[in-house]
Amino acid sequence: MSERSNRHRKTKGKFLTVGISILVVIVVIAGGFLFYQHQQTQKAFASDIKQARRLVLYNPLVKTGAAKQLQDALPGTGDKTNNAQLEKQIKQKWSRAKFESLIKSAKTQLASSNQTQLDKQNQLAQKTEKKLDGLKNQSSFPDQSKTDADTLTQLSQSYYQAKDSVGLNISVAGLQTLAGQTATLIQKKTAKANKLAEAAQDGNYPSLGALRGDLPYGAGVILIDELDNGPASKAGLQTVDDGGWDDSNVIVGINQYPVKSSVIGNDSMDNAMKEIELGSTATVKMKDGSTHSIKLNMSHNDVNLGSMQDFANPSGDADTDIDFGARGYSIRERNNDKEIGMVITGIEDDSSISDSDLKVGDVICRIDDETVGTEKSIDQITSDYSDGDTVTVDYVTKSGHLKTTDITLVGD
Image 1 (cartoon, rainbow, N blue to C red):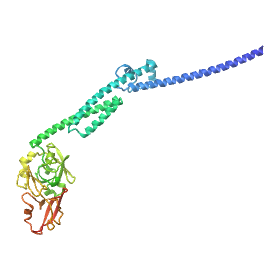
Image 2 (image 1 turned 180 degrees about the vertical axis):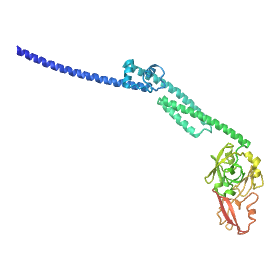
Image 3 (image 1 turned 120 degrees about the horizontal axis):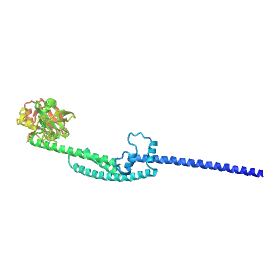
Image 4 (image 1 turned 135 degrees about the vertical axis):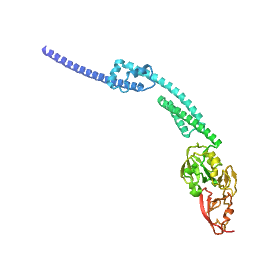
């Protein structure tokens, strides 16, 4: 009886040990699961907090409702609350389900506000683009502004499609700034253009204070004589007598305007001067690539009405510019201009110029510093010379460059 009892006791003890072991395993597994679940909950909560902060912390669309509640509960800039403290504060305020519900509501609220803002800004963008399109039709609209307007328009459209209200706000602000600046610029240009047009009509536009000469083939303008205190003289521009008959003394541009003649044609010096305000400083460009800075403080009226008697006048007429035109050796008065010079149309083998650098198409402008076609023709100028004498001929090539050559005269 006692043996059976002992065996029973031993068997019961074994079962109890196994049961306890199983219970321990179950408790350990349950504890591990609960710990894992707690860790996951902590991570999810931390993720929710991160999401909430990203959603509302610096969002200008947060005004009321769930989004405002979240923003008020989360630390702002400079707050040193750590994640553990923040999590504790949130848990004390809301359950996790409530916290998640607020985040979901805030998302919906802000998405709606964002779309409203997008639509509003998109309408403003379209209105500003329309204004810019109207400005683009004006000739004074800058090319760079056209490029900037196109770029900003493309950006605003892409931001709208991406539902990026911040990017759209920035691009619309850029469009508005560009429209305002361009409108002001055009207004100033229009006012300046009106002022320049009035000055041109009154003869109150700038002058170099010099007697000018037009080269053939639109090669540019030379200075024949200057007023001692005129703008050209003060700027160091030289006449062909003082500076030499070469490309460094040929004016081919003033500021951005090309110059091919004194008065006649779209690319005349007078047209360029009429686009420049009296009293401003201009850049005079020479044919050899050099430039001169010149203060244009003398008007066309000042020269024509008060100073032209100071010029040494090659033709005997007052208020004269000289044009070395390739038109034979005719003299034709045109406003205050005279065309002077003789184009070479053919060269005889035994002529004075047959062995010179002169070619057909070149224009003889001066012989020993006497201008051809003013008071004397070539024959009249050379009549004072003898067979075998050498003269210096200043001429313009067909390609528009100033050249000088010596010629030995051959008698008839």
